Length: 114
Image 1 (cartoon, rainbow, N blue to C red):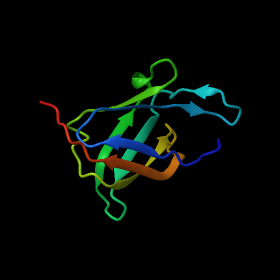
Image 2: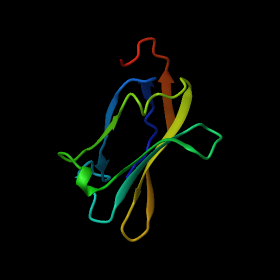
Image 3: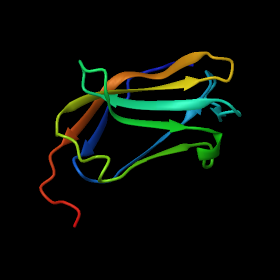
Image 4: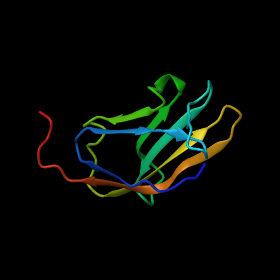
């Protein structure tokens, strides 16, 4: 599987919608098997703490995709450039990077959820 950076843009304190799709080298969609998981993590560049972390299992799959929906509360973080990546952990313990470190830019919001 070829991996490549996939920069994302989001807004502070607003909903964010995306999805994660697994594909093999031929472009065929793959889905998680029992015991496998996708780990999506957002961090400030030099800290070890997750700002946002989501873990997906086979139960989260919808039509071959894994919806990445972040709430306004989850996105209520400082506007700045963060970094994220996505990996798959297999049932036999392999840890495979599917999106390498990429930008997760969060822009300031003027309006807020009431």
